[in-house]
Image (cartoon, rainbow, N blue to C red; front, side, top):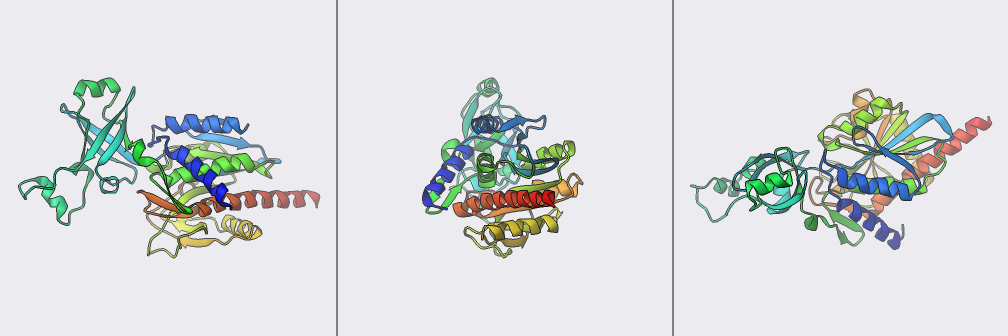
Length: 357
């Protein structure tokens, strides 16, 4: 992919990142996605579980494929609102306070967004202060942190900040940063995969089977959106788009080569579907890394484990600092799109050949 194409991909991901979407409060990204699909003249709607679903009719309407990328992001959820304007927060998905550090966070109220400071307490203290243990081999926990708003209790109530309100990293901290051919940002998991869905909506025409592009809801808290969608729609195969963690324990290299998972923490992926994706990658002369990983699940593995789909796969791009300030090669993200485009085209050719026999 040429450098100008990387520029466009970066800009698309940047737009997506700058739309807040903590699990269960995803309205900002919902409106944006529906507008984008409408501009691309692709039929799209939002279902009762909050998924944004785009449908590209297939030549064979009796068969279907779902390609999913979750649109929700991790963050925090308000546990208690103090009279002094301090908020107690707990994790929403796999969020850790030490990853975010002290700094601006946004609190999404029912009527207004209020910014506050995620705080851990002073460092110039002795063992008489509870913060002292955080300097000495003790992991920082959410119950050790708080959000300082300097608002009155009434001001917070008027804004609709309450137990259950969502907390995310402040927007001015979320704007992605370009590291040559890499992108660095919070919430590449999974906004970068949503960018792939948008590219497919633009380039995928007349697939062999009806193809659903699903921006799934509430994945970070149990793949709720994908389970709802696959329970109510007969899907022959599901391919989940995801980040793939870079770690010494996994044989995955950084760079522009995508990763195809054989197994994750929820179980095995379908070998036949994986073989089809490997062949699609071969057609466009693109290598793939194969990996088994733990501490991870996707729309595909969770839906397959629950018996909602018979065949599932997970295609991802190598990512540093997962569930933190993530770094990924723009080429790997773009190559995931190329492989899926090849997969749909090769499936179309195969279907055409079968009809002519």
